[in-house]
View 1 (cartoon, helix red, strand yellow):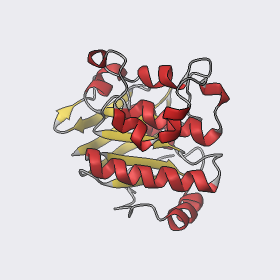
View 2 (cartoon, helix red, strand yellow):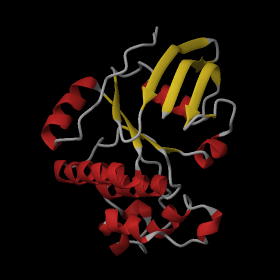
View 3 (cartoon, one colour):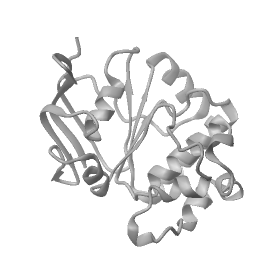
Length: 215
C-alpha cells in the first residue's frame, strides 16, 4: 500500500499543502484533480523528494520514505513522469530509457518495455527531440517503468497529445497495472479528466481524495 499521512509542504514561507491524507491500494488508479495553482504538481514533487516535506509521512509498502532523497525514493519504488515529459532531447530513445535502468541491468532494456511501447523499439536510435509529443510521452513513461516502480506518478500525461495516442497510452497503463501490480496516480484538471476518462474508457477511478486543505 502507498500511504500519505498529514503531509505538509510549500515554498519559502508559503504553505501549499496542509495535512493531506491518502491511501492507495495495489492496482488502484487515483486521480488528483483541481484547478491550476491548487498544488497538484507541488504534491508530486513533495512525494518524490524534489520539494522538501514540512511535515507528515509517506510510506511505500510499509517503508517510511519521508526523509529519503529522490534517488532513494526511486530505489524504494517511486517513479515520476513530470508534466512536459522532460526527456533528454539530444539523447536517443535507447539512451533515454537506459537512464532509468538500475546498474545491474548493464544497459539492457527489458523486452517487456518494448512490448508495451513497440514504437520506441522502432525508433530506439532516434533522438528524443525528434519524436512527436505522444511518442515523447510514451518514452517518458517507459523511462519511469525502467526503474521497476511500485507507485507511478503521472503529471498531465495527456497534455498536448492527439486523441488516438491518448487511447494507446490509456490501454498501456491498464496493461501495466495488471502485469506489474502498479499503483497509478494521475494528476489533471477536473474538467479535462471527466472528458478524457469517459472518452478513452480509462480503468475505473477508485476514489477522489478530498481530505487536505490548500489556501
